[in-house]
Image (cartoon, rainbow, N blue to C red; front, side, top):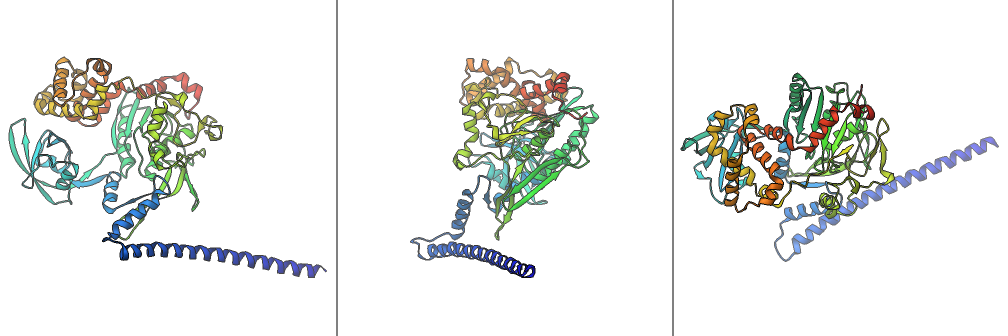
Length: 541
């Protein structure tokens, strides 16, 4: 009886196994057949169009448009890039390009050298800040034909190739010829680092590129040597970059074996990225600044810092870009950057904001946030209970896309008079400073040999402002007295900061603008508030 029952059970088990196996094979076969059918369908449609359409068809262009249309049906961040687009997109992340080593601007149909990169190709041959490029390889390089594409096409090129340029130097009223040998030119991802107080340091990172950690480390150790005990990390406007770089930066602040971020998708199993023991700032007060322009890698760093209660996040809700893209290369060198997973913070929050209402609404999200009042009023932001998460020390945080800061700082709209918005939009502030330095460079260099002297003694006085108003008028923007009074503080600071950045280096722009930066002022206040830290119990002891 028992033996017969066992035989029946065994046969039944084998039968079930065979049924399931055949079912799996059938489903897989159906799936493969279905894929083959779909591929043949697309290929046949292309053949029909090519053979029978009324006009000549550009097949490569048609295929590109079809790929783009397919990707649009998936999500906002799955994209198709031509080889040229890919190379350009990768430039800033790889951290260099090949060219002549100048920062330039096109003003009044002329190419102005704003600055030369120290020890770069142009600097080595004697080109100076303020020079105006009037010929490139014997061809006139002024006039309405000028745009960024024209300049890059003429000045960029392979390492060790040469380009002839002719410049007009206003300070000596000379026309000079130079032969420049192109070389690799670095693109920096750390805009500035300096001490805000005797013990508070500041580092601004503009992207997460290949060389970011090296740049960051150089700034970090320089600040430590200057006495830094607390750090303000500025990720405002940082739209992201390499995942590995974000993980390495977050690792600087976290103890060993803390989850920094994890990824997961239907076709990608959950994968966790953990911190190591190599962090250089695992203790000490840390504040991270974010805003609506902080995305992707910036959100990974700020999310990890927040979830592990390692520091305070200050600013406004970040962008909400938490989709992982992997490149898939096509035969012609183009690439499909396909979303393969989502990013999640250590507490389980999905960084990606919703795109279920379509790409059009998604693309207008920041505009809608502004109209809704989110940038100026924290009370306008509402999260359902389903989006509640808790940090390592049981502090309440919210999911739903982006990182909501611990301390909200409203966007200062009081400075935005119509006059101020117009002169910024038309780059009149910037262009005036270029012309002002062009005319006064020798005097300025003699009066202000160092930035410290400039910062202490240079004043945007009445004469300076009158020159600016005259310049603005020539550019078609009349001074509005009421608007100027409203924005005077910010206009004056911008003029001084831009002048400093062009006279010294770009980091000086941020150093001067600290005075009108509400986020930084709040960060300093929080770091110095011992009672606040005690109550919040944020930092490791």
